Image (tube, rainbow, N blue to C red; front, top):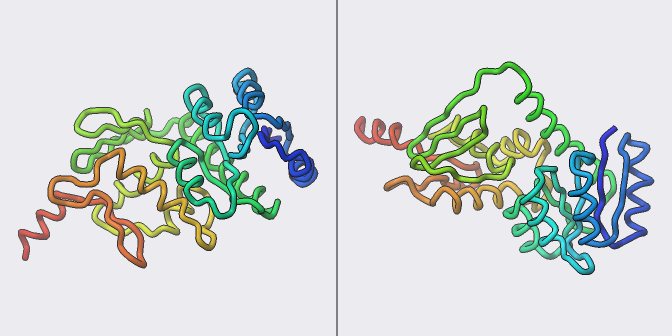
Length: 244
C-alpha cells in the first residue's frame, strides 16, 4: 500500500481525497499547516511514498516547505496550485516538485498523477537495485552517469531534479534528433500530456538555465516548433557541415 502525506489547509478537500484514495489502495495522512506538515515529513522520513503539497498554506507557504523538504528528503512531491497561477507551477517545478495539479481538479486526475510519480520512482529504485551496467553518456561539454545519477558540465557537477535528469538522459541519447514533448512526458513523467500542460517545457527551461544555453556556437536545447526538442550534437553538426 502506497503512503501519501497531504499538506493542505482545506480539511474538506483532504477528507474527500481520503475517501477517493483509500479504496484505490493508498494510505492517507493529512496535515493542515505548512510547518507541521514539514515536521511530519522530516520526522517520519521514509514513511511516505508521496507528498501532496498545497502552495497556499497558513504560517509557512508551500514553496518554503518544498525548499526545506528538498534540502533533507528526496520524497516525490506533487504540488497543488491555483488554476490561473502559472508562475506558481513554474516556480514549484524549478524548486524540485515532481509534478503539479491545478485546483480545482478531478480526484481521478490526482490518482493518475500519483500513480505516474510512484511508478517512475519505483522504476528508478528497481533499476538502481538491479545488476545493470552503468553508462556514461557524453555529448559536448556534458557528461551523465546513469549509475551515480551525476551530471557534470566541463567537469563540474550540476545538481538536477530527478525529472530534469530523466529529460536530459533522453535528450542526450537522441542528441542531434528531435524528441517530442509527448515522448518526454511518457518517458519521464510517466503520463500523457493534458491540454495546456507546460510541465515538460518548464523542466526543459530549467535545464537550459543550469547547463547554459549554448555549446559553443550551437543552441544547447533547441525548440522545434510543432515537433519537440533537439539537444545539440556538435560533433555531428561539424560532420554535417563538412559534407555540405
